[in-house]
Image (cartoon, rainbow, N blue to C red; front, side, top):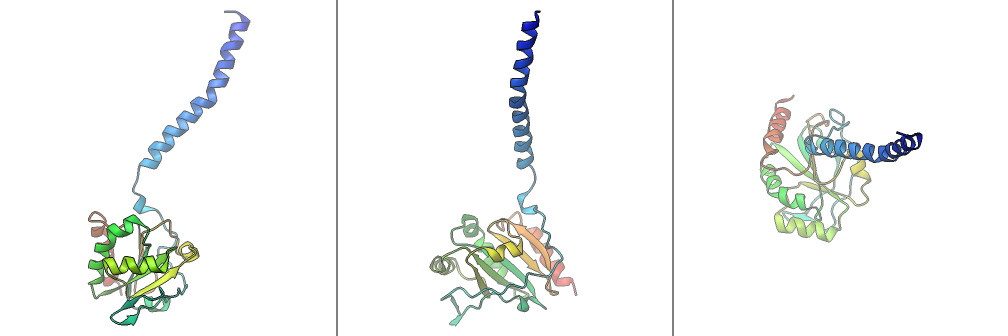
Length: 193
């Protein structure tokens, strides 16, 4: 092998090296992103008090002939509360709504909604179509409140204990598969003093 042949072989390796590294990283990321349960994303807010953000009511939303109030974190104290972040444009929110309606029938807890980056008319139409499980609905038009809550995307659900602290967080829709864990967390919060 001549010196010139060795030089050509070295250049091929140098040229191919970035491509090999790129392919290796792509394969690694593909398998890493595909593993795990996205509903188990960590939350720095677990065990911490809920964000003290009041949100205005969804304009024109009525329940039992009275306007539905906005979000008032002071009403979390002393009660078990589920806070659901939702939007009418969110397809998984449509799918989980029957589960929310069943949870709302449990009089031991209150269900509160945060309507995320949604048009008021669309949100009212959504609740008119599927039913309103919420005792209060706050509007987060620009998404800033969702940032304070640590929301990754909609839907998300927070379980607030009687002490006003976040006891559990679920990312993604409530499904038949996720409901048992949520139910266990609710029961645990109900047993806590």
